[in-house]
Amino acid sequence: MPELPEMEAWRRALNDPVSAFPIAKAGPAHIATLKTFEPPLAALEGRRLRGAERRGKRLLFPTDDGDLVLMVHLMTAGRLKTLRPEDKGPKTPAFTLEFADGSRLVLTEAGKKKRAGVWLLTREAVAAELAHLGPEALGLDASTLSGILSRESRRLHPLLRDQRAIAGIGRAWSNEILHTAKLSPYALSTDLSSEQVERLATAINDELTRGLAVRESGAGDDRTYRVHNRLSEPCHVCGTPLAQIDFEEHTIYYCPRCQTGGRVLKDRRLSRLLR
Ligand SMILES: [Zn+2]
Image 1 (spheres, rainbow, N blue to C red):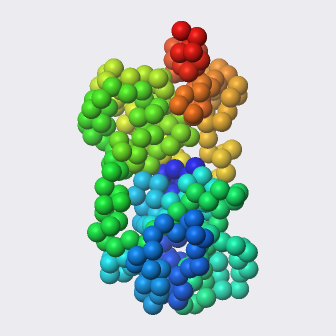
Image 2 (spheres, protein in one colour):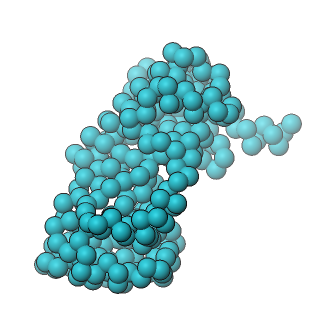
Image 3 (tube, rainbow, N blue to C red):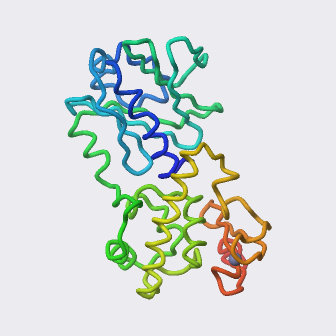
């Protein structure tokens, strides 16, 4: 699933094309993709978008007066594309926005499952929709992070992925961040020293900044991730083969030397069954 670096790279690329011309036609939308029906999509027609904004993993396209906001969540397989008037588009896009010059913004989603979503919301409704999100991960300072970590005792990997705690990080960037911070994915948030909290805050910003830069250069996953999805490959810092552990339906990747003091983590679901 695209996370903050990927979504921010999209946002920057889409900002100018979506605001260049007024919207001529909004839709059609796949029935499973469009999550709202009031206001209707037609309310966008004749209006101009202010640009592309982002909150956590969601893209927001407000009208220039801010009254309406088109919100897009790509989930795992959704992709956005801008097409010039002469470009051939996909046969059955999940959603299309056509501008006055004939250019289009199209949302496609590979596979049968339609999980990506488009919402057309009023200014008030979008605020309510986003109210549960924690502060943005990029730019998070150590003292704000310290407050989040001390709120309750939780393991670091699931805590970093929790959008209510911090917005924008998912499982891939949790792996990258915890590796750079040299912290165990299973470490408890309340056990961290202030030096470790500082290290984690620095790692969050460094990794997301690195991610954004490589994504903006057009890098695919191979050139982006150094830990995520790299089981048994040598750690880029110490050369130890990277390990993985399943936790809450997610696979966590980590370096047993850099992050867990040489210990290999046990699958907790399995150890619970065996107890
Ligand atoms: Zn290592």
